[in-house]
Amino acid sequence: MIHLLGARLFVDHYPLQNTYSDCRVYSSVDDPGSQAFPYESIYSYISAGDTIVSYLPIAILIPLLSRIKVSYTLVALSSSSIYSKVFSNTPDSSAYQHFLIGESRLISIYANSLHLESLVILRCHMLYCYPRDKNISRIISFALKYRLIPLSSRSDGLRAPLHFSYLNNVICNIVNSRLPTNLYIWDLPGPQLLSHRDICLTVQAILQGHNIRVFLLPIPYLLVSILLKLSVIFPSSIRSILSMFLRQSENLVFTSFPMPSQCLPQSKSFYDYLDTDLQM
Image 1 (tube, rainbow, N blue to C red):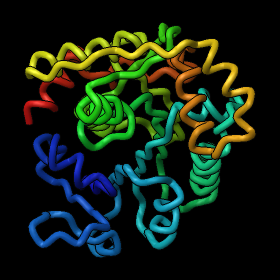
Image 2: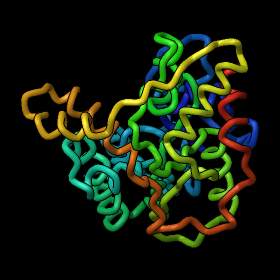
Image 3: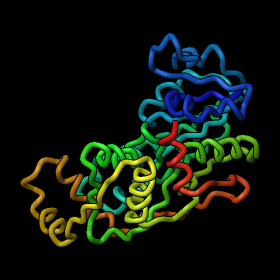
Image 4: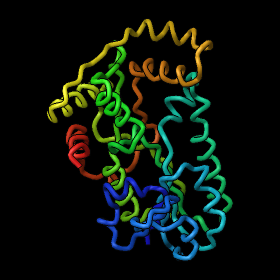
């Protein structure tokens, strides 16, 4: 059986249950109309040899693992922010340290546990599924509210947006491949490389295809750089926004630990994924 932790809103949109008949979803949200179960009920349903797929922050996941007393495989999500922010020591890097700390704690559990047989950590790039993410959805929400898409005048840095349905298919392939018992850490970029500017242009084109006219608002890169140097006088939220604009010139695609090709599914274009989201 596959046990899905913390993905009710996403899974309702792109159901992993469509792929697995033997699949159970768990959530912290008490919704009588939902088919999700409370997290605590996993101890009643999990059996030896089952797989847990966690979309939870690792800090929330770890306490749940401590009471599992049967053998299992775990697929957990981390973030490429480990590279782009923590390792790069950006001004807002402290807000993303929890990804690296969480990975280290999971690896320690794997090394010392009698029950965790295999651990797969996926460092996801720019995960999105409108309107439920904090990446592409923020661009769309701002555009819908103000009819503007602000971007740096230097926004040619590469991105690899990862749609939730593609992630689901990757996870299905991982489970089906029955990997040898081991620890795996893999970078998971989306299937299509785009500059940040191309992402914004695609959002603009899709919205205009839905009769919503929006405009690009270039912000001078030099101005952002100067403001960031003075950022000690700004709140952390402003520093984070300035860092975001500055990073639009950087390539944020990381493949130090590439995933095996047999785990990668067929894909659609970024345009098609996003346009499908907006039509739902």
